[in-house]
Length: 277
Image (cartoon, rainbow, N blue to C red; front, side):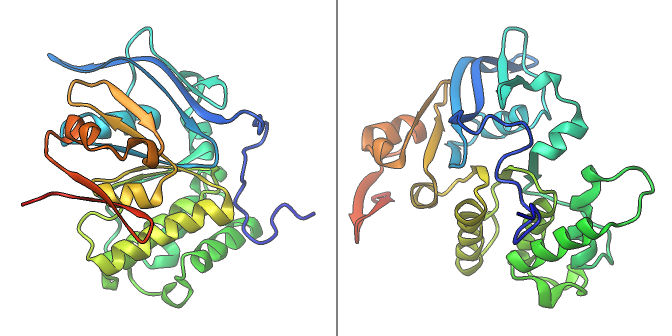
């Protein structure tokens, strides 16, 4: 079978032990900014092929944990982060870029860049310096545009796109990178409800149709409960609790995480969290 058929997106990286349920294994993770401890010996796993949300109140360490897992910060001595059974510190940045794509909350692009040209930047980890586009590159770009429903916008300048449309473009760039893992940093922030739903449906599609492992920061509790298979909830003291949305749909737990009285109910069989005013 042609490995490039349909999507070009690897469900598991080359050499990956697909029988191993955890793609990240984190043990005794320690990290502190100068004079400001964040994590003290936390441990958790991120399951392969699942959508996992990092959730918690502002200042709980979500962004710090996100950066540690993507090797944008270095943990302290004694910490162990393994990606596919291999210590994260042993990966070169070029190797990391073939393992995981990162869609940041705040992005900067050249003023006149088109949608297609921005998505093409996702191919950089697969190319040598000054190497021209190959058939595989062009196919990966075209498939990412199609998957994210951006084909009709390919030649449009990014600056002419709405915020929600631009978010789909950044996700398409990550998709063109052809990694088995995608990290998304608050992808629905600043979007109206229409585009929030559109982006969340796209993320679910990435997971269900392509098998991507997704790690996402979300502030909206209901979005986390609806979208995700697993939650890693950070307490204000830097410790955490991990479990399914069903297991963590508990008012006492939510109060512990957010220091706010919240109510948990169901609407048409779906979990719903709200705050009494």
